[in-house]
Image 1 (cartoon, rainbow over the protein chains, first blue to last red):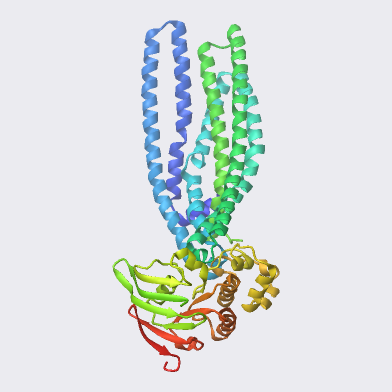
Image 2: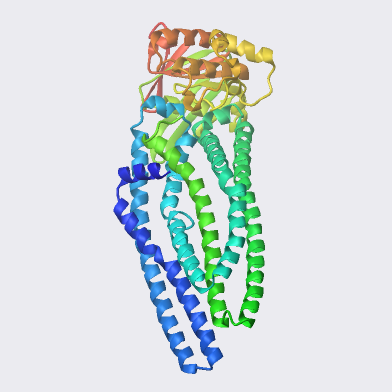
Length: 322
Length: 218
C-alpha cells in the first residue's frame, strides 16, 4: 500500500505538504491527554490539600492550554481541508485524463459502471485514505497518543500500565480476527457489486429505446434490483463485522476500568498511590483505550480504502489491470 | 392502412424537426424514406415506433394511437445497436419467456447460428456493454434476431448497414431479408441503393416529406 501511495503522490505531487500537515496534526491528542491528566491530578491534589489558590491556578492553566490546543487543532484541520480540496481536484483530473486517454480496446473491455466506480468511488476512497477521519491521519495521531500515554502511565505506575495492556491486547486480537483480515475481500466484493449496479442503471439510460420497444422494463429493473441487493448485502456484511467488534469494546473497557479501580483502592490504602495520581492514571488508560480504538478503526478503514487505491492505480496505469 | 401519419408536426423546443408530414403505409408494404443527415429521418422513425409524442397531427399504427400500444406493434433495427450488458439469449428474449425453438429460429434467420456455435458458452455468452465483446455485424444481427423473436407486424429500419463494411453488410442484409419477409417495413436511410426492395420511396428534406417516387424513377 505504501508503494501504491507513493506512486499516487508521484503523479499528483504535494507529498511534502501532506507529511508536514500529518506531523503538525500528530501531537494534538497526546497533548490533550497530558493536559487533562495533569489537570485532574493537580485539582484532586489541591482539593485533598484544601488549597484553593492551587486549584484556581490549575483551572486557569488548564483553560488556557485547552483553548490553545483546540485553536491549534482547528487551524491544522483547516489547512488539511484546503489540502484535501486541491488534492481531490488533481486526483480526479488525473484519473479522468487516464480514462479518456486509454486504448479504446481497454475502454470497451470494462462496463460503464466500472469506469464510473473508478472515477468516483475509487478516487474518493483514495482521498479518504489520505485525508478523512479514521484513516492515515488518525492512525498516526493515535499511535503518538498511545505511545505518549503509555510512557506517562508507565512512569506513574507500571502495575496499572500492565493491567491496561492486559485488557487492550485481547481487543486488538478480536478485531484482527473479526474485521481486519476479512475487510479487504468484503470491500472488493462491495465495489464489484457497485459496478454491476451502476452498469444496470446506465443500461436503463443507454438502452432506453430498446427497453421501451421490447417491453424489457421489468427485466432490466430486476437486474438492477438484484445488483442493488447484492451491493447492500456486501456492505451489510462489513457493518455486521464492525458491529460485533463494537460489542466487544465496552466488555474489555468496563472490566479493565473495574480492575484498575479495585487495584487503585488497594494501592491508596497502602499509600502507594494518591487519589490525584489514580485519576491521572485513569486518564492515561482512557487515552490508551481510545487511541487503540481509533487505531483499530483507522486501520480497518485504511484497509478498506486501500481497495480503491489499488483499483485506481490500475486505472491510471501504475499497475496493469485484470 | 397499417401506418397512417396525418399532418404530423414535431418540434424540439422551438426548432421544427418535422412539418406536417403525411404518410400512409399499407399492410406488408415496404416503404423507403430517403434523406440527408439531420433531416429528421430518425425522428420520424421514432414517432412511428411510439418513442416520441408528436406535437401536432395524428399518428395511427396498426389502429393504435397510444404510445404503449404502438410499441407493441413494432420492432426496430437501428444504425447503432444498443445491447444489454448480458448474454446473447437475454438480448434476444429481452427477459420474456420464449421457447427454445423460437429462439433457435430467430438465431438461424439472423445468420447467427455458426458464430454462436463457435462460442464456448454458446447463446449464453456475455456480449458486454455497448456490445464490446462482439463485432458491429454480430451486434446488428443480434438486434435482428431480437426483432425476429418479437414477431411484430411492423419492422422499422434505421440505416442498419451503414456502419458496416461491404461483406458484413451483405450478411446483415440476408438476415434483414428474413426479418422483413411478409411484414410492413419502413426503412430510413441516406443511401438509395439500400432501398432496392422497397415498393415506394419518399424523400424527407427540411422536415417535409416530398414527392412519392416509384423505385424505377429513383
